[in-house]
Image 1 (cartoon, helix red, strand yellow):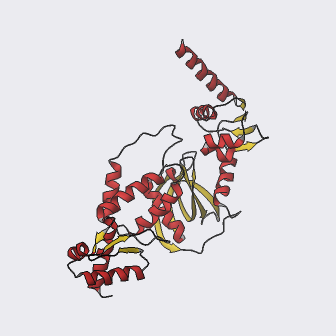
Image 2 (image 1 turned 180 degrees about the vertical axis):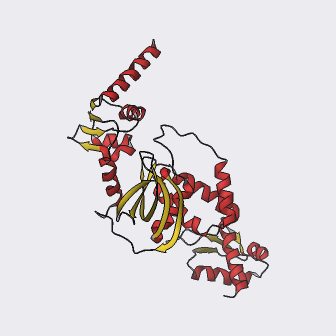
Image 3 (image 1 turned 90 degrees about the vertical axis):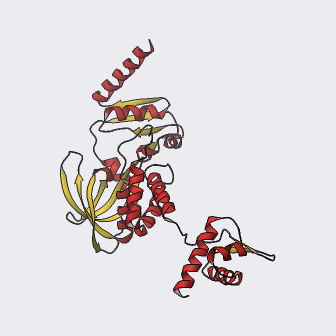
Length: 319
């Protein structure tokens, strides 16, 4: 197709995506061509895989029908900004679709013009929301998108990372996968300086930059990135120990506390063990309260003291 024809066909596609059904005359008027030209352009779209239905009659009618595959969509500037903001929000914490939203966001961010990316960032910064029972800081959606692209392209990235003890260090890594655990995002990557796999919490990453250097993909130990990260997180030391033997099936507790999935071990059909250990005493109390069933607790003295003080405070408030 010539450039003029291509532009016209793309404009036709945009019109078909705007409204459920168009008459051939209306499309011809919008495009400044004849009805016969519209029919030829409709045939071109069909050849490209777009399922365009037509209605019989003197004027004829056309609509873009659902297809077996998903063809490319054309977005105007406002639509692109709106979808970017929505995907960034979804990737940050809508249960069940975070990873799907992140993949879609990575694709869109890659082709989004810089001027629209700035608009999307400004719009998102002006929005506010209420988050209940937060498990900690959220990752920057822009960082999520950038790392998702780096994981897909196997591109080395560098960043500054603040460890649990507060020390900061410059890192150069081969990103592999992004894993969500209860609202906290982790980057699974191969650290080039340590020649070993490492897990990085995204809210502790600053100054991330792509290097432009691409490397062959590495095979994750065990072949399951989520399981690998879960195992590392479960084995990571915590300041306070708190192990609950819960009088409820493991599946029921997993459904109530999604972020604890890797820390729940079934003991039998009606009992499970939950590792609520953490660096933060109030978070341990919140985790135990979220179990919403009876349990016995094996915990450090500091944990027990904190829970007793919390219980006494609650009882005093009820009197």
